[in-house]
Length: 124
Image (cartoon, rainbow, N blue to C red; front, side):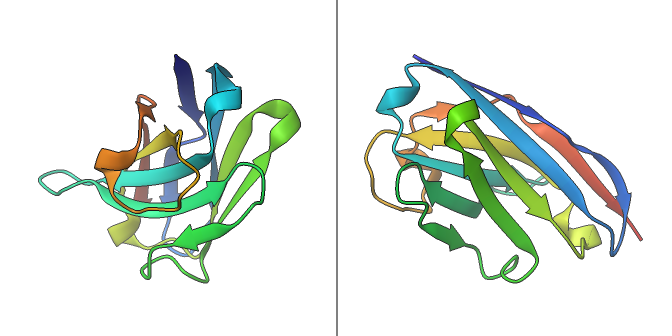
């Protein structure tokens, strides 16, 4: 089992910044890819960003490219999502996810473990 715990969500004004964190525990050596997804009320879960655990290769949704940065601290088993230039449409519950296969994908069905989510609200 891999356990994921998100933190750092909150309320921020449009144009502001926020960093959310995801701490992994358990069988972390089995994890190859970590990612962030988000889900707004009434909408499908949406891919945001992903990073490979060992190589650090990244992938971003078009909607966040240039604004969000995903990073990881291997020693701390933690993945971060730095969110800059936030927009009201970024408002959602942000979920951390992990998958075992070392292939960067955007499909939530291919991820094996999920955190509980952290709320990010961007006001106008």
